[in-house]
Length: 414
Ligand SMILES: *Cc1c(COP(=O)(O)O)cnc(C)c1O
Image 1: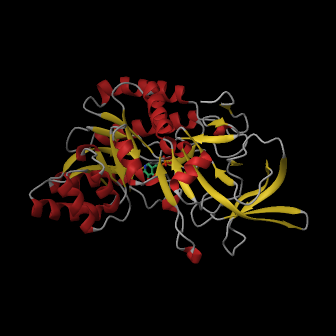
Image 2: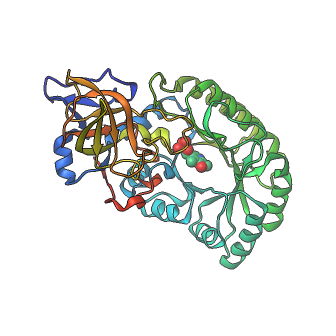
Image 3: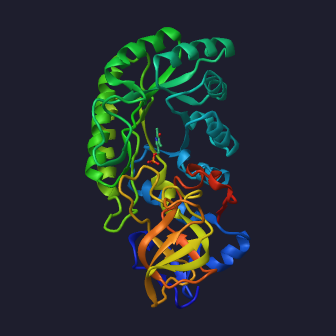
């Protein structure tokens, strides 16, 4: 590494990437060389070393025995799933398509769980045959699973996904509490458990997922404690001992100026206390934490090349070859109420002292196609590389790539 290598102070999100000769370093390679290797822009690059160090950091604070699962919908690139499968204890899937990817990646079926509100009978059948844990989300699923289990001569392994009677406060996206399409309302769970017992399914535990993108460790601790206590109450009606208690996740990452990284230490302490209580209250249960964004989000960047530079009535527009169609969330159109800029830089001129106020737009014929709205950036020209940080989760697979017929992006694991 050259002597100019140093850490960037620009934004919390950039701290983990190094700079060499003015260029961002990703996967140990300068960005311009990586772009040449990939052979095209736009592309996503995910950094193995950052993925690994994130898991190592988490393991450092999670108490012994707590299982770490990867919720692969955050980034289903096959190479990423394969890499993560080797680092975590299990994979959470949300469709039969993801189930196939997880099994292809070498995940242990006994440590794969399948959640989602609309599991079709064909998907349930594949999941039973694969011997993965199915998070039951309706009474209908129990009926279907009884039939399928009989046909296959294999009792379905099930957990009950509970729609809790509380919400995860401070969450970017709430997925539990109040009326929800996810899980079964806590007050109906005793009846569902009775059905599961009568159907002869292999009941293994509970799954509670309250929400996503939370940066407040105190609120995450509160949700985990309430989830645990609810599970202890529900376990009184369970047909078999609780073997798994999936307490969800919802760990967020900083996207916007002023957002701080999640403080993991209190979460580790809280889980250790709950695990201590579980020794008497749920003695057969292993805790599971399922994380998507937190594991992969900060390890990925999106890279697009500037194809035009325009000035319109005094405002600079850098027109890139990529945008909303590959990276819906950076454009602000994936669940954001008020659009804010993701961290963006010019990746081959990172520490240039020449700066200007510029907007980075994509090639689509819609004003929604915006990667950066009037940001202070290094002065950039045609052929320079725009980088969007915090792009490892809900990127390529969560974007409308067919919209307007531009070429698809490429993904690389480096
Ligand atoms: C989406 C999802 C996750 C992952 O959420 P992140 O915010 O990416 O961590 C975990 N569990 C379930 C059930 C989900 O639907």
